[in-house]
Image (cartoon, rainbow, N blue to C red; front, side, top):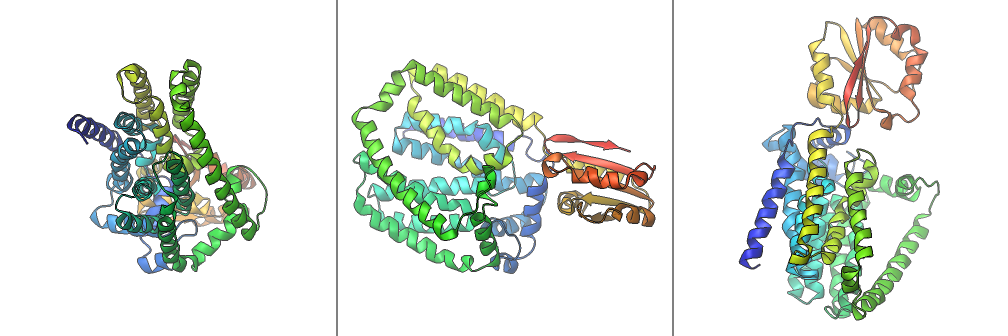
Length: 466
């Protein structure tokens, strides 16, 4: 990097770090974060055996277990996402510079630094920013490999990175076809040779071989059944279909091959006709893309769609690099970029300052303040004991219940205890209003003075009623 660009990138990274550390420990842990902490504490043997958690590979929890040895505050634990989120910024600059030019790299890094989506997940103790960081490193190694820069070293780098990615998150497998699409684009532009495909294949095979032990675990087998049975991927799209695993694998293979071929010829066509420059000079197309950017900022601030947002966060930097290709950091586009960056910064500050998470800390504090002897905390459904106990640490008697269980279970608990603190999660975890049905079945008991309900709502401060 030249000195002016180096200073600019450093300033962008400092801004990114400041935004990711801003109010980092003030928001309460919610269910997924508390569950991650619990899983990480179950021990390496159970994690490697695939008997601790059914939805993710073990690497993130193994890293988190080591991170917990240095501190357990919310701020410290969330650094495991904030630091990778910050470190991703210089990698985005490098990819933007390598694929396009340094001006585009600056734009991409600046957009990523103030992106509300990337900042939100940089303030959440989950694996998504580690996946993002590792994905960027994989794409950089693949670029070096395809452009014949230190091929042996970058083949090893790609193999290790892809193996780590597979052990980090199941969605990391999507970076295998992504690197192939990258090869197709670079080959179409005359910057890569298809002969590097053999080294790429060697790296991928090595990564898959290293992954075979995990595929034998109960966790991997469960997730495979879940995905094949449409209870995961198709559920995201609200589809109700069942896919045979062999049919799904064949479909994905054929789709990847077709995508690579189409990408190669499309990139060649774009380059020959200089389509990118035409887009840069077309006011209407630029206006349409600008409106799309503004719409994305609104969507990323609205506290909904978590299941979808977390699936796209690792791929969002590449969308920002595409935007940077249209508006590189040059005199003619600085005014427009300044407006976009300020809007993005404003959206991020709204997320950081005004959009809360499930306020389990406040719920526990409320109960602790009003606690009396022989009270009990009842959490429904049962897994709500995890975020509550993150703050309570078994200080107060508690019990999780199955909201689909026997209707008289609340009556039994009231007969054994002086008062019940009934704590529930928001409707997003209770689509069938099972809690309300259970409370209705125990209407007479609920109406008595000994029953208190604390409703902890996702993204909204908790409410309390007697």
